Picture 1: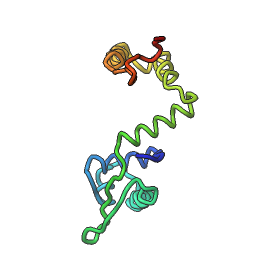
Picture 2 (picture 1 turned 45 degrees about the horizontal axis):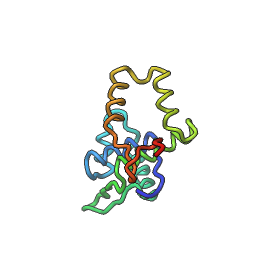
Picture 3 (picture 1 turned 180 degrees about the vertical axis):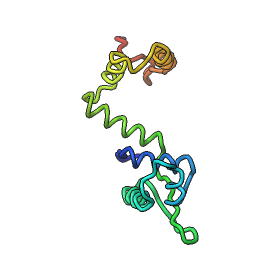
Picture 4 (picture 1 turned 30 degrees about the vertical axis):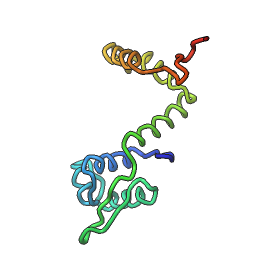
Amino acid sequence: MTHDTRLSDQQYTLVSILWRLGSGSARQVHSALGDSAPAYTTVATLLTRLEKKGVLSSEMVGRERVFHPLVAEKDVRRSMLGSLVGTLFGGDPKALLAHMVREGDIDQDELDNVRTMLDRHDTTVPNGHKPGDET
């Protein structure tokens, strides 16, 4: 994905259903929302707006319009998280992690998992040196 894809909570929920289903009509998406679903017409309008935004495409299948996601979930997450970090933490992801640790939003097991991921992460740059090496 080359463009910014920020979605509201409601939009993200609808697109998440389509990621799970692969594709679906407004009726199928509305049904998947269950008891918490807004009116069917609201779902249909939101899906149409997401299509205009370039997040979804659609085609007529019989008498129903079927929507397909055009963006990958990981790309939307990256865009939305980047926006959050930019807005709340001045673009510094370390500040987000520090906030989570300070506020207790991350427990010791999760912190150990993060350490393990960081240890496994290859930080070697193309010239063979690690960032911060003075050679």
